[in-house]
Image (cartoon, rainbow, N blue to C red; front, top):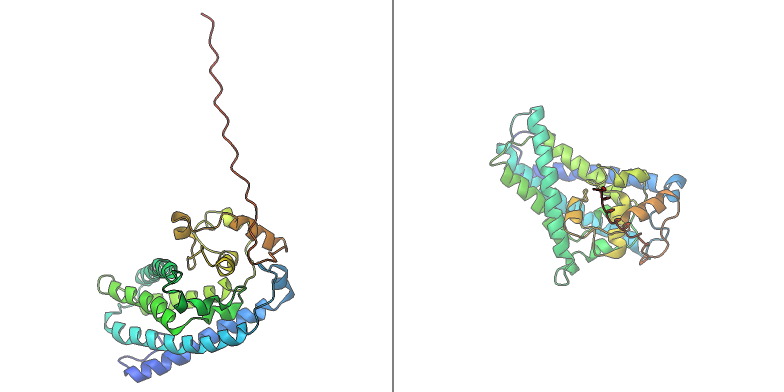
Length: 280
């Protein structure tokens, strides 16, 4: 959406074009996610086998309108002021822009997400937790204040970094597209990834739909955006996450919101055998 704008556009033009492009991309990802979410195959792999809350979709749809408008202002402002800082395209610079933006959003989201779960700030986050059981539209269900904090803060970090490191429109656009797609994917309450993923090296870095479904059902824990690294490091990962993931893949998703699965304790280490004494 950033690279499609003309050179030196006026601020109102930036807002209108970003609203059109960003809003269309959000609509397409959520609509595509909904189309997949309603298939029989998706129903087979539900993480939580429960109905949506009464009034959930209406509440989320209204919130989504605010998110689309807020994002247009935030992304448009970022584009308007970062334009002079954009570097000419090169593959290495685009990859660097993407990587920094990905890492910056991950750290910013984890920290602010944990803060938003504190009692004094939770009212700004409550809209997102209208969904105890999620579906793709939940990806756009935020209060305006929370969206300003999450999206505005992430973009602000990248804007600051661009004064030191080069950034390209291609890298930034690629990250925003990744953000939209993974957001809808992660809120689908449908586990598409195989059992072995969670214990693989990739699964020890990146999230699954199960990972975020547990956050919505349990409220505390699993604060990461699209990675699990900070939750693992800071002790906010659920011990039964691999078991819940396996249940979803087996078509036996959880049926109770507060349900937790037993986790086998680690096998005790065997004492070392005493060394045999050699006869003198």
